[in-house]
Image (cartoon, rainbow, N blue to C red; front, side, top):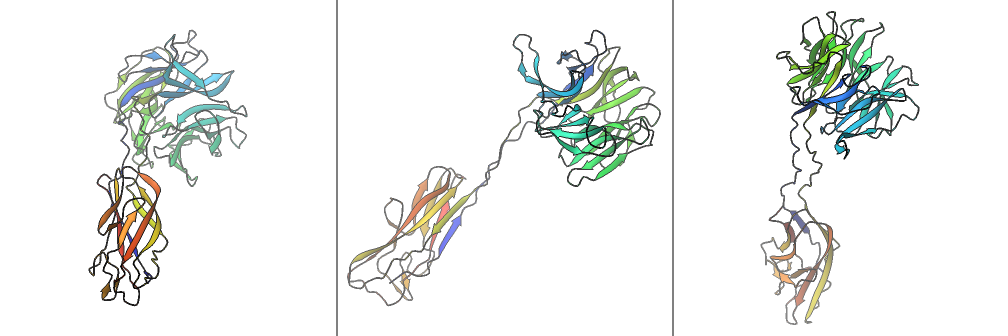
Length: 448
């Protein structure tokens, strides 16, 4: 007699998911800045770095052709900056992991030039380190400057924001959903702080004191909740901080000096900025976010400007999560055929299956969950005298409950064969009808 309507119940045992180790928390590292100190004529600038207390000053770019506008990479190992090549503004990168064996200087690479010969300036890293924003000037669009993006090597250049007026100082929010920049006003010399929603392209004005005020140089806080910027609303440039939505604007510096270009410390507690008597006489300072404890870090009589505060170089962990998985599939039906009374014979059937397991060890077992004649096929009130036998692959047949197969590592779609065998004796009494039984196959592990 055939075995009919057999139900295979698959049970998966839940385990712990594997998570990648967290990256080291960023801490305040060195400050990069632009200085004219290393220029013999004091007419061109280079990129220098120093410790947060002003010690350990080091020149990192030695090109005599006006390098400026530095921005640290998220891992603290590279600086992107605006270089000047053949009287054109371009983008270059300092890599502190590559050193010249003779001089010990870090390697400097010029990214691929704009294929249309346009100028590139004010570069900033994507928060994920996988691309660069920059200001593209002399663009063929409706304005003289727009915001573009490119890969780190200078390829795949594409526009991000093409708006009616010029844009300056672009940067993505830490989650890359917002684009922050300064925009010119219709009045010559005026600027405002704008933010664009990346998904919709909607632009919102966050701060615009007046058409004449120069509200500029916006910078995201590390957590993306605040924005620091400069404004000359009181007659000379001062440093301000506001919420990311433009609310709660507060003036941080109050003096008759020239305070500009704020940059956040990686821990979000301090600001680095330029301070001096005018735009040609500036030094690098730091202060707490509330304006207290202002400290002068450089003393060059000329111009030190555009600080950017990097993190201490730290490894960036790249990883993924594997969810705990135990999965068993069985295909086909377990038809043992027609049992013939009075004939001693073994009736067999096979099922094809597959196992996927992320565990270090996996056991496939079988049991008969029913309460009637456990391990025996039943037909109403009658049961076969001999138990049903089950096996897997080349293993010997066993009776339920039993372990069928053990795997010693993770597998994906591992093919298996379930064997079923029902012995019938020559004198076994057989009742007219269908003999059947529901079996439960279980995957389990002790090391998820």
